[in-house]
Length: 267
Image (cartoon, rainbow, N blue to C red; front, top):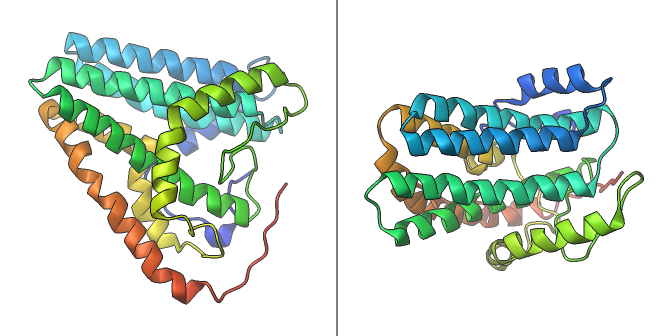
């Protein structure tokens, strides 16, 4: 099942691993493997990538970063093809992502002569970028019949779906809020009206998709193999400026779009 109807699909530069992810999901759908198992697999792939970075095996690090990105898409695909979405999987995925992101950038900081403040700025920037992408993407998925395990506003603990533990959902949601709450609040403060009727054009979403984690990891992988590891942290620090550029474009388009009505369907 696609996350978006055909009319609102856009070229997602961060989603290059989706075709392989679908193959993996279809191969696993009639097995005992669950989306949680695939999430654990991408965590392991990320940890191997970190080890390779620290050891200077940059080609291997790049391979496992991209493998992590593919597996990160595969867990959601498996949940869709088996029709078994879960909040447990959704929050475990997100918490694992932010921890791995911190470790990826820490590893880059460790092997380069870069200020710790640049590392912290790069990490904050990387997360703000990803938050804006997810914010706009979830708005599309909510307004145009996408899945509902991801929500525009993550304010209250959701009720566990069939087959999952409410206790696990509570714990993982608390961890999610701790990790992402500040980034969600910052993005919402700058663009609080994004969810109120604006149809986000496909070309804008393609631009914002450069903030997607898949594209971010691809950039890190490319810089590693090109010997540009010292550029990674400054790049993510500076590229954060584009967050405000994209928000400005979205707000500029809003008056032209707000007059258009569309239905909101959730399932």
